[in-house]
Image 1 (cartoon, rainbow, N blue to C red):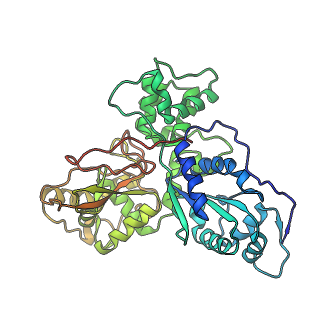
Image 2 (image 1 turned 180 degrees about the horizontal axis):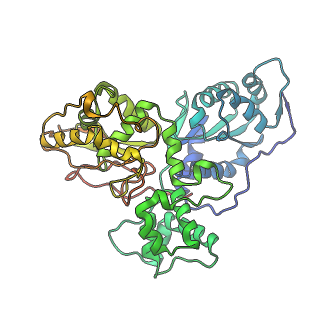
Image 3 (image 1 turned 45 degrees about the vertical axis):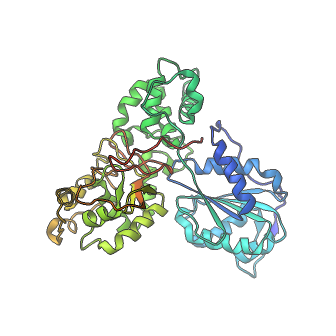
Length: 454
């Protein structure tokens, strides 16, 4: 391959203000100093790309051969990844060998940072190419963004949390606004939509409510801020009971998956296997966090054998749909969803009724009564569409109460929680980011949102 002559890189100019993320930027620098590959993971809309671009820009002096960005979101074929990276580097195909081999030859002896953005839908090709290039080029560093890790040797994974948002515990003062990047982001994006907008004492409670109910997810906050052209902060906060219907005003040049909040969640849903989608939908009967033994008894049946549940939960956690956490004194493995609920009726789509109509709801009732549910093929699961086809409708579990019959054994065990929204209104069921798992009542409560910016 021959180079097109560019040497400094191809990072785009930032057109909007970068908010927060001081701790995350420092961690990216630290990880890249000791690892050849760093992957930023997290739910869609949490700010992985923006963080990667800012970190790469700040590191450009450390890479004399440039900092190069390859956006993979528009690619649909695994075989085109190496060719696309070569094009981003300005290389011309000389023929005679594979694109990956030619890239490895070109990068050998160079000190260069390659940013691979949005790897999740081409994860196999991205992982294989990164592995081949890193083994051939000692001076190469790769900074990747993906909803799941590349899972290759030498990879350092940095989960990207949502922005810090205020809790309900006490009123805020204007002097405290700087403590919450989520509110700063809303204020700045709202000011772009309506020049002169400011967070004041009069609207501060409503802005705090918006950021809290959206749990610091940058994409959701930006979509909410865009509504300031026609709605006041108080009206936006009131209408968040229908998040998926409200948050639909993405910019014209945004990728399709970022035009609306629903599109972002559906992108994650499409990346799941049919079995993962089925479990995702059935987890809607829980509210907040849940543990492995509960999921195995409530969600398993002939279509979803209990011995597959653990592997599927792990797969959903890998894809940033669930957050796995650990709780002292809890014996069972548990999790929390990343696809938020809101109002506990979540998605107003045909599948929303499925979780109860297919027998999962009765399984929960049996669990809470202390008996093991028996879900037969006649329960309706196999005859209803939705769980394996389109995005889950109640992305949030409907109960967080753990039955008294299942007393935990002493020790430390993991719990799973969802990663979109867990509070607020119908629309999603999860909290974005890597917040600690919500614990069952009586065992403590979920701490506040993560720190950082967009």
